[in-house]
Image (cartoon, rainbow, N blue to C red; front, side, top):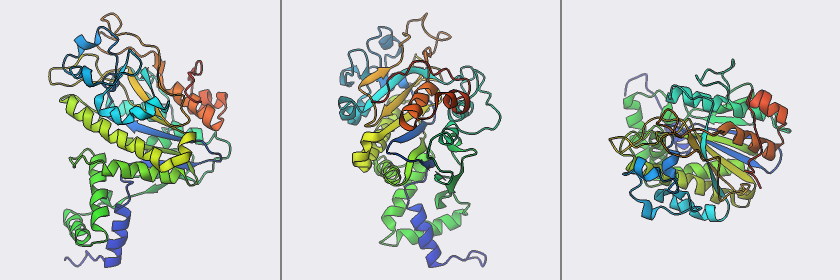
Length: 390
């Protein structure tokens, strides 16, 4: 071992205990008084909402997606018009219980460039216009929201990962954890860390699971056994049963330019594992919880020549939780006819995804309407309450 690389056995154990935590994707928490809870999941890569919740009742859908819609017979019907992707079938009990809902044809104000980076910033910042330009400050709407929640404290936020999530970054103080998997170890150092922990009966399994989760969140290939995602959901639930009341984290891998059928099945299985683990971990506290899963934009109405879809505009939001007035597909459906599409290619947005978040913050935490439209989402017209909450 080189003389400048001195690591004690105790240091390895500490490093392993940190790495063994499931929180190897950026996760943020914040506490506030009361029993209501909010989880915001950022689905990075532009989730194809037209594939997750399929509008088979629209006559144009099957023609636009002959390959992706080929499994229509195995897509569980939701309401006679929309059907669920077969891979999301584990979530059907939530739908039947009124604890799952969707909002179709939603978007942020960003409508022009279809850039992942700009779109994700626009989603997490909560401001900006069609070009994605953000207001000065470059902070996150959830951070600004916490500053407006009665009883919220300034020292109860935590961010996990190499970078803080923009959605909860800003003037409201948050803590930040920097896991070992993202530390600047050399390849030799990482190899030694792997070897030592693999040989330890106590740490071998949790360490391996934590490495799998970390690789999953960064898009690397790992076995799709669901362990990492259930572990993540369980940890989030544990935090929310303590002092925390708001959590946010991101899940990547939703960019489906090719072979979408395979990728979407894997992504929905993983997301189902996360959501169900959160519910199981919260137990009775699930009844006061709302989960919102948002993505930067939707995808093209037509499938492309490689079995996928390209960057689009109108997208979809997923909502879950015991506080949800679910078993609904919210939003005004614009149609998929040629004249109904935006630029003859995208689902036309008919709603602002930020409005759903704003009404959720109002109902869960009592954030004032003036603060929602002036501080949290400057310039937002919330419109009529869609009835997202019970």
